[in-house]
Length: 211
Image (tube, rainbow, N blue to C red; front, side):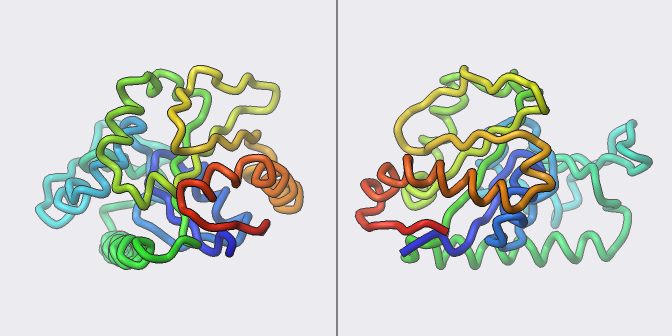
C-alpha cells in the first residue's frame, strides 16, 4: 500500500506544486486559492466555501493580484484566476464535485491522502488554538492521512513554531524545489517518508511503501 492520490484542503498554492510535482494530484477547488488563514480548510469541508459561490455571497476586493480582481469567498481568496468569467465559475464547481467524490472514497481508501500547506511568510496563522480548532473539526480519516507542507523561501528559516500534536507530520522544503525540481522533490519526500510513515501506519493500521 502506498500514497496514490493527494487532495489539497488549503491554505495556499504550495499544495498545488507539491501534488503536481509528485504526480499524485486530484484537482480540487482550492488548489491555487489563498486561505484567509490555516483554519479555512474547515470552511471548505463544512460547505461554507461552496455556499458562498452558489448563493453569490462572494465579493471582489478593491485590490488586484497581477491585474486580476481578487475575489473573496468564505475562507478563501481567488488571486490567480478571473472569477468574472463564467468558465472560471464552471471549473471551480467541477473541482468542488471532485472534492466531494474524493472525500467519500477516502473514507475507506487508505491510499488517498490530504495536504494542507503553509508558507513561512504566513507565520501569523499559527498557534496552538488554531491547530486544535482544525483537528477538532476534521474527520478522523482526514486527520490520519494529513500531510502538512511547510515551505520557506531560499535561505529562509523553517517555522519551528508550528505545533506538533501527533496526528500529522510536517514535511519541509524550499520554494525552488517545490516549484521546479521534481526529481529532487520526490527524493526529498521519499527520504522524509522513510522516517515518518510509521506515524501514518499506526494511525491507519496498515503498512505503506515509498512512492
